[in-house]
Structure formats: structure tokens, C-alpha cells
Length: 303
Image (cartoon, rainbow, N blue to C red; front, top):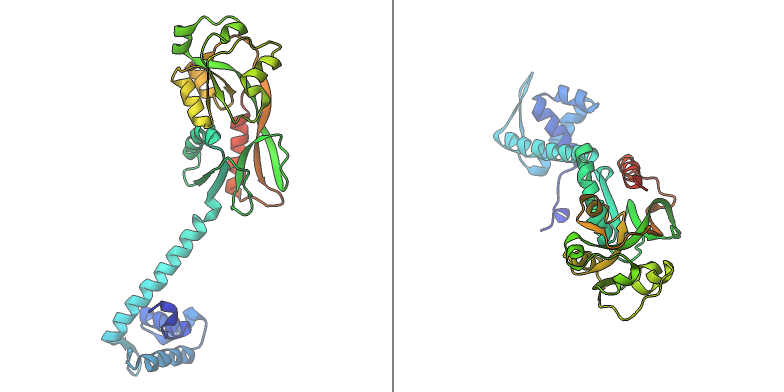
């Protein structure tokens, strides 16, 4: 039977008995509970009547727990202690120390996760909950503290701060450039395998539009593979399968390490931006504010 349907003694009588049993004194229990000695004695008597068992042997100047009283006192003490410990745990490591972040798989994989790892070294007691979605989710209904979104920065009900603009250019692996290079001109790009992210947000991130935006004409019909998953698209470029339109900030770690290199020399094209977002009108917890400030500082580096 569920606990809620069981007939239990009053909490007041349990508290009075536990205090009296722990102190072996009605008087000391009364001081602890800030009530009279008579009130403690009455509550204990009510508990004994409820149980139809004697919990104390009452002597002229002292009380003594019966065997049943000792058994019950251990159970009640442990129960109250467990409740107190859990409350302390909730107060010290509650949702105030849990940061829920919403973003896309690309941002989470190539940008957020490395930064979270470094932040854990600074704030080891902070926990993270990561929600990955390609939809623009409602930050309030999903209890999201922070989101990193890509676009214009204008989302109803959301406060947003620009972190970085995306800068794209034709990138490939060093192995691919060694096998297919040198690629000296934009015309040379049409003679090597090109990779396309077919759901790219920016017009310039598709190859025909890219050529248009750099003032060139895409000649002929180059070999081209397309991907509807950003993770698969990036992996294909990393694996040396072709040239993709990528760049900072998401690919910064691969550019810094030399894993990816520009296929052709050019100034990167600025696109839309990555924004740090939170629900409008909501006051973030101190942990969220601290992480947000740190993330903003880190991800703005090199912008």
C-alpha cells in the first residue's frame, strides 16, 4: 500500500518522541523544541496511545526507553537525519549549480564541449545539461538557462548577445590538398571534389552562391557530394573526401592544429553570427551568470 494511504501518527508527536529519546529527558526535549515539558509528555503519550505500546519507563526523576522505544527512536532519528541531509544536499548542489544549455549538434560538438571541459577545471561543482536540437526551442518551457543560436540575433522572448560571426572559406584536410593540389585559383576548385552542407543557413554556404559572392562564376559541373547532417559534412572534410565551405569559430581548433587548411587563399566571408541567448525577463542564477560571462569572454577571443 502506498505511504500516503497509511495511517501515521502526527509529525508533532514523532518529533517530541525523537527529541525526548535522544536527550533521555522530557525537559531537555522541551527546551530543544521550544515548548513546555507538559506538551512533550502529552505528545509522547499520544504516540504511545496510537501504537498501543509503551515507549518509556517513567521513574520519579528520570525516564528510560523501553525496547520498543529504542527500536522506534532509531528509525525516526535515521529518517529525520536522511531528510535533513537531503535538504542540505539540495540547498548546496541544487538546480542553482545545474546549467542547461540548448544548441545544435555542430555547436555542441565543435565548440561547447571543449569549453565545458576547460570550465570544469575552474568550477568543478557545476553540472551541465545539454539539449541538442536543430529546432528553435522555447527556452522557458524547456527550462533552458542559456542557448547558443545561429542567425540574426532576433528571436522573440529572448535576450541575445553576439559571440562570433561565422567566417567561411574553402577548407580541406592537408592530405586532400597534398593529393589534389595545388589549388591556386577558384577555377581550380571546380576540378576537385566539393562537399556541400545542403541545409546551410547562409546563402554563401552553398557552392554556387559562394562563387557568386566572391565575384566568380562556377564553371562546368564539378563533382559534388551533399550532406544533411553537419557532423557528417565536417567528418567528410576531415577525412579528406573533398573541400567544404567551413571556418571559424566552429572549425577554429582544426585550423589552429593544422588538421584543416584553406584550399585556396582568400579572405574569409563573414556570415551570420552565433549568439548567447537566455529567456527574456528571467534572472539567471549566479552559476549561470558566471558561466555565461566566461563563455562570452572565451568565445569572443579572436573575433
